[in-house]
Length: 56
Image (cartoon, rainbow, N blue to C red; front, side, top):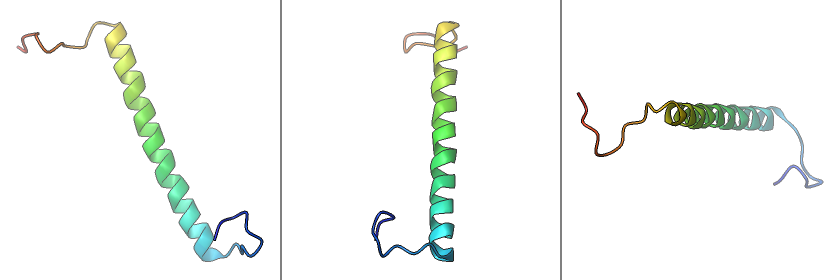
């Protein structure tokens, strides 16, 4: 069943499932956004090491 179906009934199980699903999606989205922004900032500041660079 989908929320746009007329037979949909919001009960505790649906609230729990969709609450957990959106919580998980939010955490993953925030983590991915942080990683992308950190990568961009590090690249613009020249902190990224290329494959040919020596790691001392």
